Length: 250
Length: 98
Image (cartoon, rainbow over all chains, first blue to last red; front, side, top):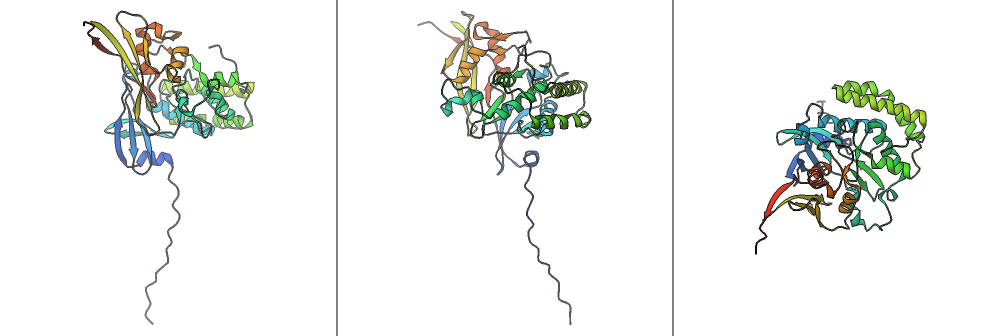
């Protein structure tokens, strides 16, 4: 009997869901639109996969101080710290070339700066901090305390009111504002609401961050970034020791 | 003739389209920045009440509309996320003659 060709039955295995970072990195770009404004920001449509904001790695402000600025590094550093903490506060981002120029490519979130609250018909006496979960405020305040954020205002944190969630953007001036600036509205909100005490979840996150510091130092080069990381490590230790975000003087 | 310096502020709506929400104007005859737009809009109320940092020269303290050109020149650094985006300060000459 002649041997019949053997056909194996192949079923299409379930495809693992592509990560957002992977889509940002490799997704086919459908359309690029420049936004009106001084900072060079573009809205990029990714074929079948939503939209992202693209920001050039340098703008004029950074160019004049380029020795201390590296936008991709700083945005990526903030994203990496957030990832290690597991806080899910920084929208997914990657470094990518768009139209021949490198920059930060970050998922466009369905969220708005606090000042957008009008469209949600928020009563005048209700502040933004009443419209998101306290755990989100605490996480964001801890994050800002850790990175030494002194440039966090209503224009660079976003609210997803449906999810009662906070997103943090614009970490490009982080280095510049280590020693100056006026602090973080999120830290002030946590202190004002009396929710600055860190809970077990944050303790675990901070301990995890402490264990990951060497990995971060290997990943991010440059003396300025390393100085930021030294500050992060020091403040993580302080938070664990004190058990809460200390009052600020700004 | 009056010389104006102005900055426009745009917000990104849910469909990723920009909408102008305010124009900040400073004339050469005044030292205070005036705001054209809905003054009840939280962007405008917030910026008038809370002020902005002096990004350009990193001087301590905050800047408010009464700080004139310093305030105007720093708006582009304050609003840079894309969700809110300010233009550079530009000049406009208005002929006031009848």
